[in-house]
Image (cartoon, rainbow, N blue to C red; front, side, top):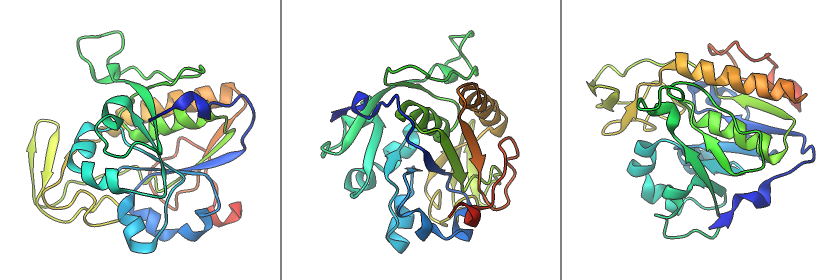
Length: 240
């Protein structure tokens, strides 16, 4: 495992792309991102299996996603993995894995001053805060690494429960194809996922927007369509 402080930067690294995994990711020319710095998450390896695209960095936050895909994550090659320390320690191959300390107090009801309250790391310490979406961790990573412009793609910001599913509290177990992501097997039959609670995600994104703009940086949304209107829109093809 590697120390994430090696990736910290005080200089402007320009732009990077953060990939959400919504259906709209199939509407863009993903080939344009092969020469760009990009952050991919969760089951993006399904896209790699389909067309060979690999993000620069690969990140997971959700414990269910990690547990149900541990073998695939361990076998995912050609990317730089940035993982919470407790996940990285379980990998068989750690050579290309950077680790960080993940603060989960956003989900901890026993900490009323932190529960549901977005925090954002603007320091040079490799500790990042959960905020209901792994993309929020990625925004902090992009800030930490020195990117002045973050461009979001595949952020549809809308979810529907599959017609056939079982819900137990916040956990949803699918019995059919996944309608919410770029691949039907993403959270397909047999997969478990958590209610996304988009209101909480939006609150975290608002914190990220504030921190970026306060530092003279920006987050743009290049997703074709979708429901995320917090960040200024830009047409994907116009970026190249």
